[in-house]
Length: 182
Image (cartoon, rainbow, N blue to C red; front, side, top):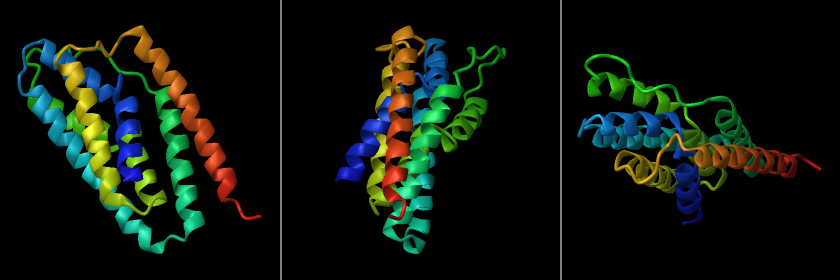
């Protein structure tokens, strides 16, 4: 249960203002009703892939190695939050949801939320709950952006992402330090 909740909260926080939320929000604002369902489906698929990856490596890991994987995932996620910024709104004439789905799945497979789902799933030896929590947290954030409840480009979200990035870096370094042999 802890893996599900941690993954849910982490995915929600890192998806706020992320590239996938911005793209879904931009397409929804332009009247593409399929943007949110496509974002949700690709998000769940990417989360399932992260969970599968965690479940795949789990039998080969000793507890200290699981902690190191969790630490590395937190550090990579923190770096992703600090370094990658959402792009501009799509400028193509058709605003194709099909093309957006390819971009969404590419973003979501490699984003901070899926790194965290993988790391939490491995660290807690609970790949399926971590994937489910990640998918649900990402879905909630995408929905808030698509429905116009929050503006994913708002300054307060950008500041919150930077703060959470520092938290993830500190947590990752602390977990990694704790997992080192004495």
